[in-house]
Amino acid sequence: MIPDSKNPYPMAESVVLDILSTRPRLSVRELYALFLQKNKKKITIQAFYTLIRKMVNQRILVKEGQALLIDASWVAALMKFTETVQATYLSNETTGANTVLRPGEKRDVVFETVMAMDNFWTNALIIALYRTKEDASISDRNVYGYNYHSWFQIARIDQEQSLAEAYEQAGMGYYILSGSNLFLDKAVAESIDTKGFRYKTIEPNETLGINYYVAVVGNIIFEMSLPQYIHELMEKIYEKTKSISGFDRQEILRIIQLPARTTLTITNDKKRAEKLRQIIKAQFIKSLQRQKK
Image (tube, rainbow, N blue to C red):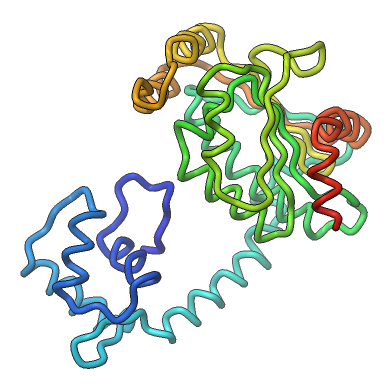
């Protein structure tokens, strides 16, 4: 029920909460008009009235005359739940079993599609973010990454925006390099809307090469390469796309759902993490100096 921008098919209640979170004190009919604009599955006004009555009875919404608002007691309960999740779930060893490894430990996690890998990677980055924020021994808590093509940020914008916002809320900068300079690579600079996001294109090199993807959070390194035939399909999209009007996001989403065993390697290696961090940081010296100020 909690609004989630990554979910392409949200529950009707989630859409209602998403609207009222930014537009409180709407009438049912005003809310219904906005609901129809945002929700892919259309419902009748009668069904919508039934939904609203249910949410009022459950103390999720409250009515003041004709105006609808999110019930403050529900918000308070949600905040308490969030604090509990942070204190227990994200710090639980079982939750981060494949993510937060012991020093020197390395683990390969294999998936049947690139999308499944990407879903896991996003979840793992959030867990690593939380652990890094709590670890006083880590001096540089920013996130540093290199993507040969940052297709994540143009094909799965909502997911990547949520990730960037999580970094920003934690006070962490988000520094990404791309190893290609094609139109879609350049477009990434405008795709994420947070103050801490920095993006730059460079020429591939011996460390940050073609079809290589890496993220460094604290001492944890996440890295992978696309399966060769997926990489080749992705290359064709990047090479042929010369404008936003000529870009079909669904084409990338289709490709990353094709059967293709994809391996994400996770390593806890303080020395190597620092080496990668310094290589990426060197491209963002001015931005990092502004962040310190």
